[in-house]
Image 1 (cartoon, rainbow, N blue to C red):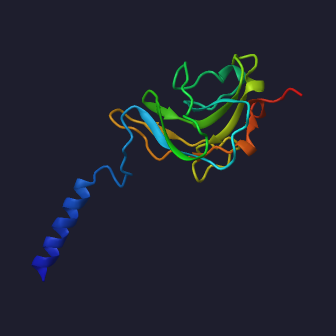
Image 2 (image 1 turned 30 degrees about the vertical axis):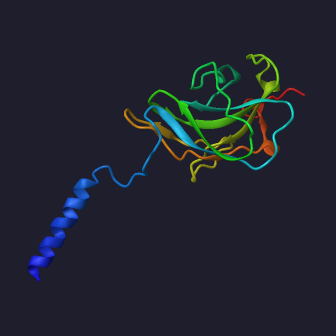
Length: 171
């Protein structure tokens, strides 16, 4: 009996040492990328130029911060059609990101002066315990690995003006 207990303890110790990273989700996301699934439950507006996935190292504090996102310009829209569920992947530098979101852009030439008119927050990644209006969800990207399962819903029927986060909103 003692030999069995000792053997079981040795196996358990080996298993613990083999899992020195703890229980972590398996990832198929390449290094240097944030990956996940975007679900589109409502139809796309007719004036859509594109839908983009952006990541902010810190939540923007003003309109001036809106263009401090990753990946850098020029942005690549998610492929059409914007319906059902589909995977996405964005290349970003290693680091921590406080806000990963989908941005809908109305047709037109985007600039810092017309961001309130042409952009809408259409969905974002949220940590389960987060109660903020913008749904901060800390996403960490470490060297040699990607971050998978950063999933969210893009609801075209429930989009928010960018100025909602930086009042006042224009009429």
